[in-house]
Length: 100
Image (cartoon, rainbow, N blue to C red; front, side, top):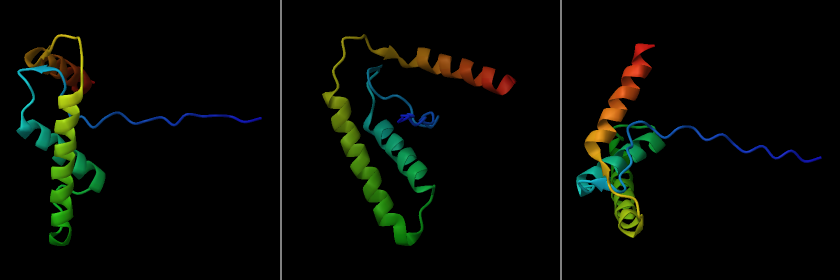
């Protein structure tokens, strides 16, 4: 008898935010910041050594570039989400999380 157990995926890092379908539109700076957070998380290093700096920087730029293309190609019929509403919801979640 074969048992198929699906792996449990951890929650997305809280520092990486949704960038698709926002009003006002996502900026290149926001895309690069998300790419930087991703590379930091994956590499386990907020500040790489000099030996790894070039690889780190290249990864950030490549991920930012791929993310820009992804965001440009995504299609939705939903109206853009208001950043202020999302920020208020995040503050409410944080208040509940830290009130414990």
